[in-house]
Every structure is written in C-alpha cells, then in structure tokens.
Image (cartoon, rainbow, N blue to C red):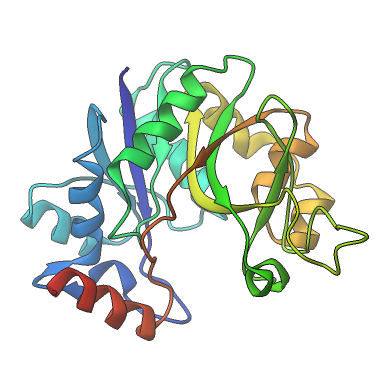
Length: 245
C-alpha cells in the first residue's frame, strides 16, 4: 500500500531546547528520524516544521521539509496544513512519526498504516503493546488504553485502566500506548474544525477529541516495545550511546 510519513518538528521544547537539531553521532535528530522512516514502506517522507533552521538541516541531508505556521496548537494541526500543501487525496493514508523518535522501528510504521487501511470504518490508527509492569501502570506519564473486541480504542488515560477490582491495582487488559498515528488525509483536514473535548483537556490527550466526536481509532498491538524516544537531556545521552555502540 502507499502512504506518506509526515514528521512534525518545532524547536520550542521546555525540557530540551532545539531538540530536532540535537546531534546524534554526527547527524541532527530530525534527520535520524527521517532516515528511520525511510526504511519503512512509505512512498514519501516529509518533515513539517516552523523553523528555518530545521528546514535547512533537512535540506543539507536530502530530507524534504515543508515550512508551516508557527501558531499551530498541536501536531495534528501542523499535519493538516502539510496535507494541504502536499495536495493529498482525502483517502490517502498519512503516518505521523514524532520528531523525537530516532530509533523508531520501520516495521511499526508499516503496521500502523496497514491497520488503518484494513479498517475503513476508522479515521485513525495507532499502536500499543502489552503492559505488565505495575510501576508503569501507576505512572501518569505512561498513557494506557483499552480496546473493544474488534481492536478499536475505547479510551486512553493517564490513570490505571481498566481497574482490576480484586487484583490490587495490577495491570489487567490495559495496553501501553505508543505515540504513533496514521490518519486518513480527509480526516486530518477536518480535525482542526473539531471542538476541543472536555476529556482531552482533563487528560491532556489530543486523541480523546477524536473519540469524543464519535470517530473510531484502530489499534495495532505490537509484540515489541518501541525504541526509546528523546524528551530530556538524559534520554538524548542514552540514545547517543545506543546508536554509537
């Protein structure tokens, strides 16, 4: 199948300034991410940024970049502008790869795209894996999700769901969410017009807007965990060690 990978990237980051340009073994992180995405089955890889410095770094390494507005409230809004610039058809599949995932598995990108393509009643797909660690289950920074019997998302939460009444708060049927998404381009065009949902504001999880408006999200359950992302200077050093060594 044919799909497009779009990598949103902005320089503003409270925990790691200029994160997309952070050097990892001689290459900017955003270039590392694009190179990993290029190992997937995507027909094209595009970085969507609001920073000329990021666009210049991409151009220097043969990565296509689009300049987008600086005032987008979310990555999905930035993707929607990129979809318009690219002129993608409404039924085209777009995979959003985060710009701080230099170890993203290409097979996981492919699986996310295939999952959406196989479920025409869904406007989005995402990825999750089994959650068995009680400490991760209790951690509000670990987003949990539960699905229906058809593998579509019922809810995402920072809280411990589903709560196992007789299991002393141990994981039970919960999956750990991976921040990788595929969208139909037509839905991305519509997304910025959807009202922000109360649940989205409470949990600070943008995907809850989609469920709140009655749309469906398909979930690919991976047998593998993703490589570590980069949110902090400590994360960056860990990824550097992994790539160099």
